[in-house]
Length: 309
Ligand code: FDA
Image (cartoon, rainbow, N blue to C red; front, side):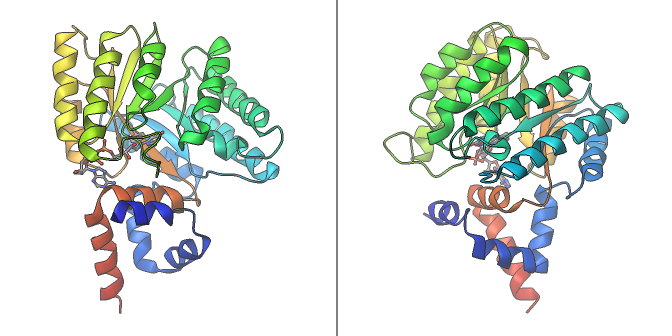
């Protein structure tokens, strides 16, 4: 219920302003977001790389409705890749891109604009020997995003995609995409979706995640298991053994600031662990989705606000 309410306000401009003005909210932002500038993302990446972790970096922003904004987001990614290259970090870090941030939601030829912008980012990533993963957003964009993924892979086969276990269609998508070299991140799914397209019961979502993980781990692709759920991490490990997958033929992924001890534990076991590092000033939608995942985060925020009077 709380999740529903939170996700319904994730696009509220008014609440965004309140959160921006409230100093205690900053502490919450700082836990989940690396900072606002390119240098902040590079610094966080260097720290994580030094601890043996891999990184995927997200320049925050989504639902862009202006062409200039889409272009400036693309340019921010190009600058980020140059900065990672200069810092010698492109063997440890790739980037994650939301197509709605680079134009997918623009009226008219938004889809083409998003594809061209994503292509430019893939080209720049390739010059540094690294890759791009396309984040997955709400279900109205799934078909378009998978179409653009297919197109990008013609020139850049290492481009990663994301599948959300809560969508009823996803088991079939896993079968289609568990092909040689195909990098697929599997997550539970973070948006508010109708029962008609998605499982809404947590147990059902977890069971769907296991079914999808089995398909990906049995397949020929490169599964990226994005979850903090201890049971699912354990099942992922068991599936790796059962399918004779060596560390390096799949990876775990977790979000910046979430279960860092578990990230360190898996890294110490020799597993590939990639941390999703968001940065930039458009942190509001991202933060609300993180709060919706863990109501105690919201309690911490409420306490901080009260203690500041
Ligand atoms: P679940 O939410 O059940 O959490 C399991 C446990 O993990 C919790 O009990 C808690 O201990 C801990 N935990 C989880 N979230 C926490 C938080 N915010 N704060 C503190 N503790 C927390 N979604 C999407 O729709 N499209 C996408 O492209 C992506 N990309 C993506 C990349 C990566 C690397 C990750 C890890 C996740 C995503 N997601 C995503 C988000 C994903 O869909 C999902 O909403 C979250 O990962 C939470 O689901 P869990 O699998 O962690 O389980």
